[in-house]
Image (cartoon, rainbow, N blue to C red; front, side):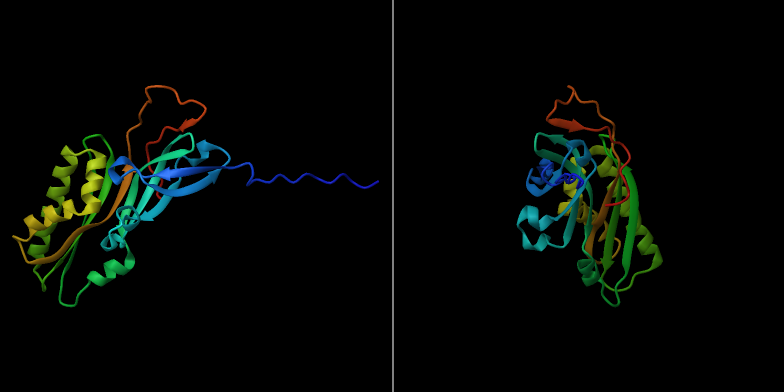
Length: 217
């Protein structure tokens, strides 16, 4: 007697599709659709896109954005910005012979208790002295610390990604030496406060407590 044929479960049919939206400070735009059989498994997923895909401005194509799923409501995934960075090609294009590159890496806590790491970069016109590099780096740290102290994480993200922070550093640091580019080349969310929702999630809403942010992007 032949053995009964085993039923093969189609895992894809068991999955639902969920739309991933950027946070309000990036326009709440749908940037991806991802499948899952359990909405709770979407918490902590990271979706990559570019600033150009959100803004439609071609000059923004060199900025990569990584959004972290923190809440699932129905078929909608809510996110926050996990990190951003200049593309490798764009960063390489900024390098010039006879110019000094100045990097500053700073850890800051925002007014709403999000801990983030900010990577500021600048390029000078011509070679500069070590004392000038140090002075520019001090300006970078001062601007980052002052902004983080008074801004929420969403406001800080907006200023880092869209260039306001880089512009403020430039306006201060150009008094030290001539500069041709200043910007936040990269940011990384390190941790965020544990929040208790005002009401318990229903069957269509999934939330997991999150604090430390995983290193892998």
